[in-house]
Image 1 (cartoon, helix red, strand yellow):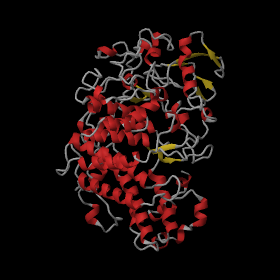
Image 2: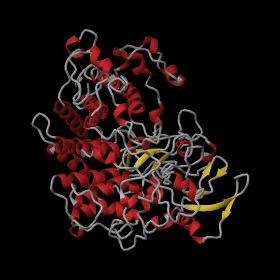
Image 3: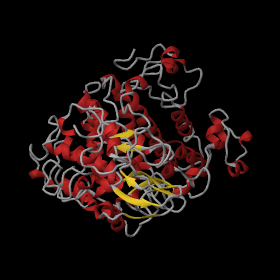
Image 4: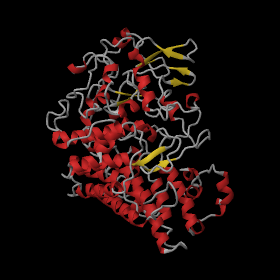
Length: 605
């Protein structure tokens, strides 16, 4: 999305004179002479202004995509408390006022308020109104997930609009309903081709409806209706939007890893919108791969590894091809291919003294997954080639346990999350990378549709074949047979979740892990208690040399879960545990002082 890189100078000027870094843009638009009346005149004026909306809200690899998954399955190795800090982090005095911000909503409304007086045709006005509605709904969705009730701002708010500035929030239903109305208008009125390749078009709008409708519909099912309105209309909207996308046969990229580690996603029909990054261009690339193996390590729990299906389509508790977890090599055999692309498989090599060369050990099992990844990525071996490399040094073995994070890919659980790792040229040297970042893709739409259809009571084999089984075929997993899933299909299932729904949620986890969805999913399902579970890592007994067995045992702090009694338990058990008030953020203290009419979210003082 090269166009995203154009700076939003006009927006910055109109919003208060924020500096602009794009000199070329300044040459074309002398902002000292611009006013609303001259900025918002022609189609091209609106098009140029809108690039700032893309740049501000549709981000991919600038932040840590994994951060949204930190919960019951993924952890930040820099913090041994796991998710336990969530309660304190979310106190009203600690929540940044920057989170409760409507600057972006104002930026969109500034454009929307100037459409009617422009020189555009009515059709073009409807198009840009639709684009504005899409971006406004996208901005509100992020706020809605955090705060629930919000002030709905239809127009730019001025300093004299005291009745708006100091009003109580609108209810969640008012906000969500406006969002849905805006998105349905956008779907109908945005041009079929948008404004060119990789811009907002009706399919991108449908993808957001698919995501938002599922979230809001299930939130209301599990948390209760809002203004006596349940979530069915949002689930129906999600299903309708997803179905329109599925009916177009947009397919999937053949290799799961290609979705996240390709230098270009251009022309991929299943990638509905993506962030385009450029190699070795400061400000236009990202350093996610370097950060994955360096400053910000994420690691999975044993629960995550166990959550992936076996190749026969059954969970580890009932699969005939699961080889157990006596060793981590056994644990990874015959599994969903997405596991191998998300959690680094085990291996061990002999590395030279200067760490710049490596060779196989004598043990065939220790090279098993090096050979396997070479075959899996035979067309793109530079992506997930093992052994791992950090700068100019090879990592001798995975798991690579350590009691204290030092460098490289040392972990506390032994399950290194390396979804965005690749060995493309320059990645190992910390150079700016140009792998594109998906924002909306069919993989998500398919799991959205499966779940929404189940919640509406319409999930059957035909739906499974059109959604989950498309994903399983790519993942090397046997197809789901809906009628075969009974109460004993997975003996480790959360017994409060219906067996088929459990499998649908499992598929969602497998497809989206590391893309930022898990914590939001747990909140909308009202399953915060998952975060009270003791996080555990690799099994200690019979593990061989993971730095040393003594070190592995030193990381064991104890657990009251018999299944995991011999597993690494470096990360502390959450204390305090999950509190239900954390399903929503508190309104920041500063905001409640400025506006005493704001109503604090439940449970927060």
